[in-house]
Amino acid sequence: MHAAWTSRAEKRPVAPPGRWTALFFSDDAAALAAGHRPCGFCRRDDYLWFKSAWAATHGKANASEMDERLHAERLGPRPQVDPRTLPDGVFIGDASAAWRIEKGCGRMWSWDGYSVPVDLPPSVPLLTPLAVVQVMEAGYLARGERF
Image (cartoon, one colour):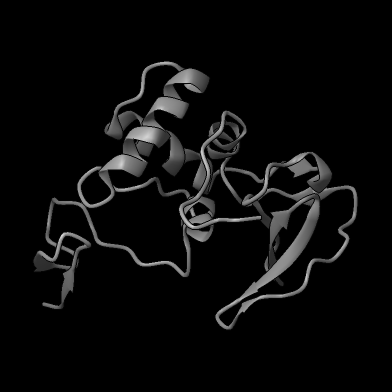
C-alpha cells in the first residue's frame, strides 16, 4: 500500500479501509471546487475557520454533516450562475475546461497553472459546491489565495 506524509510529518497509508483518505490537489481552491473541506487533523486552523464560516452560513457544523452535504452537492446538478457575482476562488466550467474566478473574470486551470484572466459569458455552470460558495461569501478564503 502506498503511504503519504501529512503536513504534520506523519507517515500513514494513503487509503486505509474505513478511515479518511489523503487527497492531493493543485491548490486549495481546486480542492474546494472538488467538494472537499480542509482537513481537521493536518490543517486544523483552516478547518476551524472553514467550520466557523460554515456554521455562520448553514448552522450546525461537524465534519460528518459537512462531508455528507458536500458529497451530495458534488454529485448533484450544476446550477447556472453569473460568474461576476461569485467570490474569488470559486470554480466554474464544464467537461471542456474549468476556470477559477478572480475579480469577476476566469483563469483557466491546467496542471501547468492558471491562464491570464479572461471575460466569461453571463451564465456558466458552477463547479464549486454551492455550500462552499456560501462559506466563501461568509469570508473563508482558500489558503494561499491572493487575488
